[in-house]
Length: 170
Image (cartoon, rainbow, N blue to C red):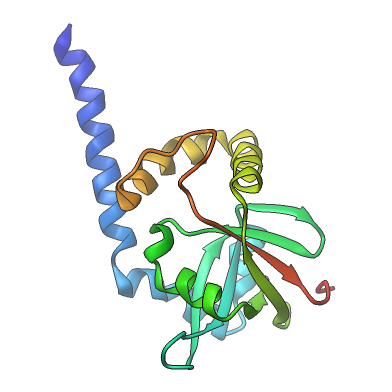
């Protein structure tokens, strides 16, 4: 009986560790940026966006492709830092909140980034888990592995950024 309980746990842990390793692969994580730059962002649909931000120490333009975690209003998108508050893009947008957002095949939109409060983050997490339960079941252990902390339903440790667009793309 104990073997049947430990095998699924071992498989789950292996998948989480493998997923975390993939997320740490710079080449793999940068590939979607080239698709957006080639005006092919539409292939990701509405679940992804590219965020252009300014490096906090260099002042250089930086890019990252992120999953749209929530879209609570036509001019608002929520994204998550799966690597926590230590992620470079996350630190950059906190230092320089004026960003540009690339959505699908639309021209970039100017936006303002702001870290969500714990209550707002809990609400966004609950909405995401309701809309995408299988995706969350798959990615939760991966994100917990990269964060190094468990993610709960209340007072989530998962840092989230709200992106408020200056104008809604048409």
